[in-house]
Length: 244
Image 1 (cartoon, rainbow, N blue to C red):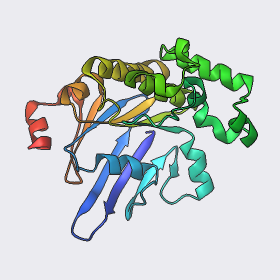
Image 2: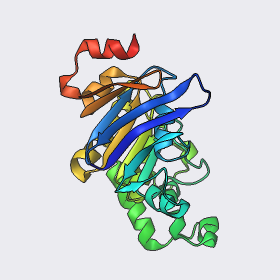
Image 3: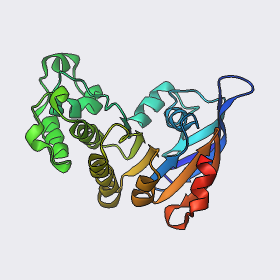
Image 4: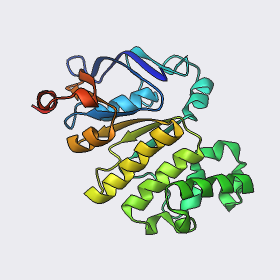
């Protein structure tokens, strides 16, 4: 397994756990959708996996390393293999699509190169290759704030490819996109699982998207994991259980 979560618990007050003793394991090269109502704990879960929130209890094993107890240096090393994609894209508006692609590799570049946008040629080639993969090569030198929402989200995916990530954590990546563009983005993530053996964990609100693109669905309700099943085995009653 690529990722193993054991008894993860997070609480901001004694009587209201945000995550309540959650355990699951993720196989490499799979697309896992997390479903749940707003406030169910989906975003907190993804942030806890990266230790952006420090859970009170539990373990998160990634590449045989416990991300919750390892040193800061080891955590930083492991995070290089994990890319995040958010609803609001998290791009630098005044930077080009290519420059945003290189954002996941800034730890390898001298600070003066970043300020002057003097990136090594090999790294630029890798960024252009990633933009080609997401069908945005012609937009490589366009500023991010001049791109459509769907194009910006594809730049974020290209950034993950340039980062050489093996795991992508996507938090509502299509929430602000129209249905057609949402299908394009999710289809792209699905293809990365199938063709590149990348692993995707994706928070979603749309049940139909989860059924179409995921291999497996986790259901959260009030901080508890109430469903963990292959997508092909799900019934309508399972979704009612999550959203009732």
